[in-house]
Image (cartoon, rainbow, N blue to C red):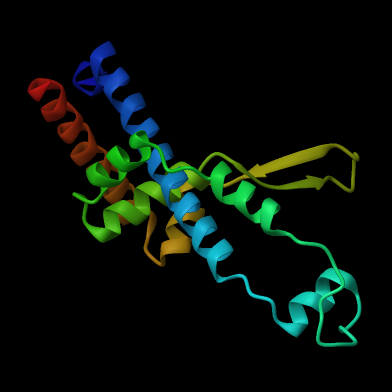
Amino acid sequence: MADQNRKTPQEIRLRERAMEIVESYLDFLFAVKDVTDIASEGRCLLGIYSEHGEIPRGSGFSGFCRLAGTVDRIRNREITSRMIEAEKILSGLESGQRTAVCIDRHFRGKTKVIATDPLNGKHVEITFRAIDCAEMLGIDEPAYRKRVSRGYQVIESALQSNKQVA
């Protein structure tokens, strides 16, 4: 019974590759969001006030040009072919599966908070668990696990079909 649940080394490598694809997809989403945010930055009074601590006193701008910094920020968030490939693969998933896989890869197992035990003073690291990720999506844990599992199955089958084509 336990043997049927064991994964072969090929299946383990395929799952690791699927996780890398999800990581690339998350990088793609963050890069697109960053470029969109940079493009929507404007020269409003509140922005100038937050940057310089005072409201401008005339019609001219007496500060410094930030264009070079903005261009560097856009250039550093380059969208690679690997990210585009990941976006194509994950677009084949249902929306719920795609969201669950992304939440799982981005949060689960990562540090949520580091607390100090008041009795002995030791630091305790609390990480995101599957139930925490399920709560983020507003579903129960078994449904979350099923979405993640089926999402990875779709990614793995897409990777296998790409491997056979190549």
